[in-house]
Image (cartoon, rainbow, N blue to C red; front, side, top):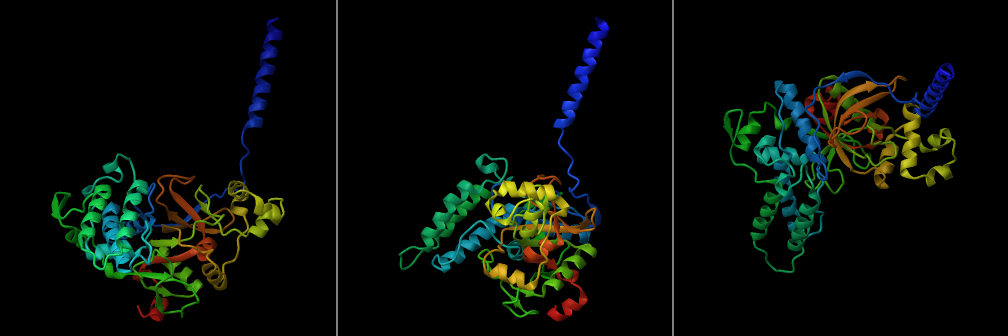
Length: 401
């Protein structure tokens, strides 16, 4: 009886083990395995949370890396300081245009640079922690902008023949209530600073930074303001051919620099798990065992699942100058997000990716880092800020920098 019982137990264990084995998820052999080619130092991953301030987080992250490269010192620069100053200046422009331009949460890399040049900057600790003034643990601009946006638009579209400057006093009160007051003085590591003396102590030259783009509706090797709404300061970008745009990024990373990148992350190939591919949908759907009609009917989630299953074998388009221009003009290539390019890696098939720091906290498979193929960056870059010393000498000469 004991022997029969023992045999029965052994059989039960074997069946259970077999069932467990069947339930175990299959390993995806297409998941990319990365080898780092070049990785430049960055500061910690931040979380913009529920705010449209990627432009703020990515650009200050860029300057933190610039300071780290120049001095070896690590800083945490204050996004709320930049936002406070930027939203006031943007509101002033909207009022000057009588409301015929956009007041919104978004911005460009030019905004932190302009603020640092005009007002200076402070460390994160010199202002209230994001969200703390209204009982949140991180940024949440829902109530903030639901109060501020109608206020600005009411002033900008006023029927009055003359307005007073008191609207600025009221707006500053809203900004300070949700973001905190920008300090006139503060103590950092035992020394007293003003925002201007602090920025002057950081060891970087704010005149070293330029913006790069690549479109054919303006002549190459000239400058123009990229025509997107969040470029409300009308910053000038140097216009270069696409291949030179990519050479600039590669040279910068190889020389130890980072890049404040702005571009489109609304594409199907940009996954929430930390990968980005310039998907060739026509080829992807055939590899997934479907026809194009079925592919177009699939939900975004199901498309992402197919893309994830294909992994590093997913087919990509070959970006061209003509395709970039076409997608910009037909609104496919949009100005969605800002991040920081800081390295280059390759997968098991030899395909190269840029290592990109995001500002969504330590999310995704790589804890806040995205691996974006070079094809994706070439196809979806709107513009980027870079240290002019990171640009190859021959391209700098063409640009007259």
